[in-house]
Length: 425
Image 1 (tube, rainbow, N blue to C red):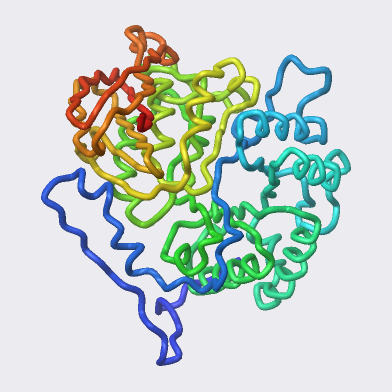
Image 2 (cartoon, rainbow, N blue to C red; image 1 turned 135 degrees about the vertical axis):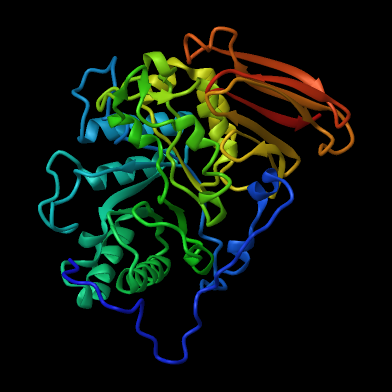
């Protein structure tokens, strides 16, 4: 733990390159949504073989408090619950599950492990089902209590779990970004790469390391969905304006790199009926606002934050989310204003994924599909329902045929969204 502040930023050896400081200027807000200058200025890749790195989606336990119903076992941090998560992930073609805080000891990743979680059994079952397992860890436990000995501790831990078949670690609670922590982040990333482990630096913001070590998929540094669990009400609504934040972060925070927002709430509330509930959380804004995040927010390891039960109860929404890739070949910023709304299109192969989101202001937009190549496209579209203003879960699901000459008239409800998948016919 730091005990004092120095009167300098960092110690240099005289040969180190200093960080870039960049200013990005655009003529329209929307162009910021597709600006990759921070990536271009980042360090070159330091992993010679990246063929083993496989981004994807992950079913997450913590946000939904392992709330599973309709089963004959007690849900929670136990083997039966995670076997169920693996089955859910496999059925929906979700590549990974995360076992979050509670599986390990409070001060160690090697001792005092939870007797209720049989990791070897879960790893074997996941391998059989084609689902990988990622483990949560605090930064402190991954490097040990003495940062000077951190490399040796990390090597021991990572080799042990990689040999078991664990796919990676979600590393949390760095809590600062001073020189010591950044040096440690590089060391952890390099160690993870040696053992073919993926990393989600949930407790750290991006600073270019993800280009040097692309086995790091995500970073936090974002006021994500987890904050909804404890969001207080003030007057006639929630204290914080989350929908406005959702259409601000893509212009600002996402410039630096991927963000671990953890979207996917299936309980969706408007201002007048939202309240924070730790064990049964909900989101601000509409269902389709949440669904649009899977195209809008950059996250090579994108989470499904709600419970398998909720997703099974809303299977057509789950089917749509499960089809959206987590990395893309091309991105086009179509429209938007910082803090008000976003419209973005991303391509994977010959398929386009398009999404729009707004703050609490309802909007009518025209989405010009001239970016589509020649020919016809089958469009699978989710839009806010006519009653979404009263019930945020209301949506309308339609299919139609479109082309590059089409212009779609889109209505976004208050706190709303719109999203579509366009497949070449």
